[in-house]
Image 1 (cartoon, rainbow, N blue to C red):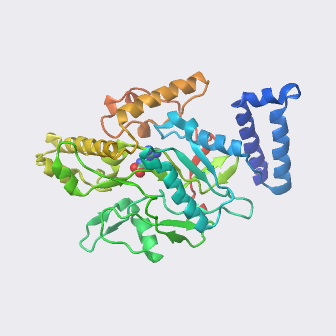
Image 2: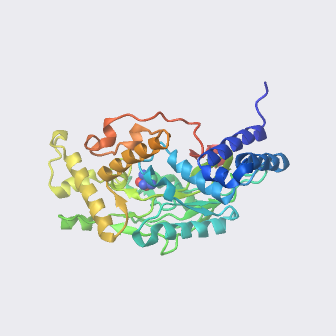
Image 3: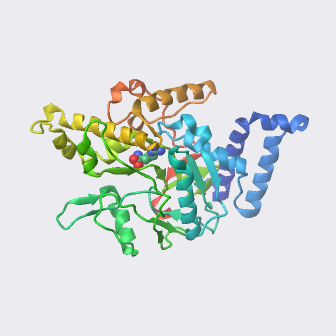
Length: 377
Ligand code: ARG
């Protein structure tokens, strides 16, 4: 048998999604009344549109539902209890890099919300037959530049070395700061040359880090941004791919305190913090790494709280996740989860998410957030 044509698999995925949408909105069937057939009517419409145009258009309600369920299906995310509250910005009419950048900045303002972080997704134009949608090159809307200095040391975030180099090649000027926000790189389609945009003041909110008991901590000059907004994943709903659909939640403290600032491949601050704490680094057995990690995490949580910026601690977020699983079970739905991503990177066994297994991850679950393939970047 020949492989199914692109539009045959689109048709299948579209049908699967429309049925799911209606199954989870039983009120639509009730509203359709005695004639019923709300699903059948929508299926006929979608099939006809695919037949005619090779694609179809989600209704605003379908788009909102699809984006929320993509979050619900994200097996690596511990924060899914609030999936229904995701604010969905329908920006499907927006595709030029200038406008995409402008709307990404507006996204950051809306999500930042003066510190009361709101989960938001901005959905830009989809990939259509012969008409690809825009792409955001950055992996997050806000990222700190990083480069290796002439002395062979790292300045900034090594994780962003590639992006920093690309921005520089386009004419962006980096400085020697530890926390310099990168510009946003946006392209009109796969392979198109990126345009770059400096993030405007007011779009990026950052929190300077202090420790409640150690005045010297502030002198380290550490900071982190308030809104983690993933911008390099494809949102796939009912066979339609939205390649530019940046989304954010709020931070859990350990993402910053136990990974971004602590990993040896990132800001690598454990030795620095341990020395300032006066810990004995002559042997691993003093657990200087562990003690430095805890104090770094105390500082992150304290500073965000003090600045009035939403942040979860790993104990509370773990407990919420188990509530989420129980709530989903009451709706008859499994909660696929990836243990190695769900368990926090510090004090795992002190949180309830450590002590159990989860429904297996199912790569065919849709709607979903998917990694962008290299050829479609
Ligand atoms: N771990 C990533 C970071 O530290 C962010 C991933 C998304 N996190 C979130 N809380 N929504 O930047």
